[in-house]
Image 1 (tube, rainbow, N blue to C red):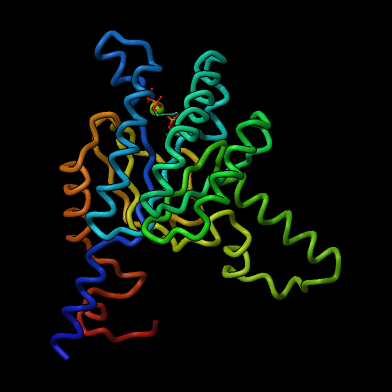
Image 2: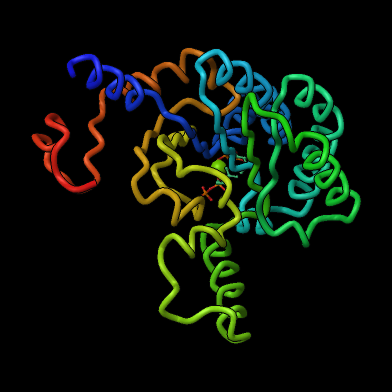
Length: 254
Ligand code: IPE
Ligand code: IPE
Ligand code: MG
């Protein structure tokens, strides 16, 4: 019995899914008198480092916010550079990710991107679809409000077509229409760069996620930074509406 509790506690102490708002690239660059894009380039290096860091710690799901539906409001030169960087990174990293048994998913409204990039994304999805070591999800032109809206739209179509009754709409059904339907909900949300907001990231999915904010700019976010976030996560008690006593004794309704 004692052993069972210990095993459960251990499982609880480690996040299965980490979702990150990678913020602070621009300020990292400005601090050094460099153009903002230099920060984005360094940010890509941090992304690359995250794959082995998660691997070493046995974290199977990593979701990264790379470009929000609101980021189109930035100067067009920065938007263009960001899209180019996404494209070249995908091109150069796809093989390496595949060799490391990483399954890559790109989520968001991809229709606004150049056809060439959409094609590259399709290729990456096909190439890595059977990989099992790490589920790496990159959110681009993603917004939590957009995700919920597109889920509603597809459910509404099913209802209008007579394939679904309105009574059959449950939280689980809505979840199955979100573009994260293949992923478990995030256990740990990290935002680097000092801001403490969600910026239209995974709004539905973060319902019971532990939130962690740090001042470190994304290009400086390293293995120690990850471990600090993991230590903070391990010290939290996830109660899901129950009392602390119920969690300790394992009682109460599921
Ligand atoms: C995050 O860094 C990257 C993207 C939003 C694409 P920022 O570019 O937002 O960096 P700051 O917040 O201006 O420092
Ligand atoms: C959030 O960062 C989006 C990404 C990291 C991709 P922003 O820098 O765009 O967020 P706000 O505008 O400060 O909320
Ligand atoms: Mg920012």
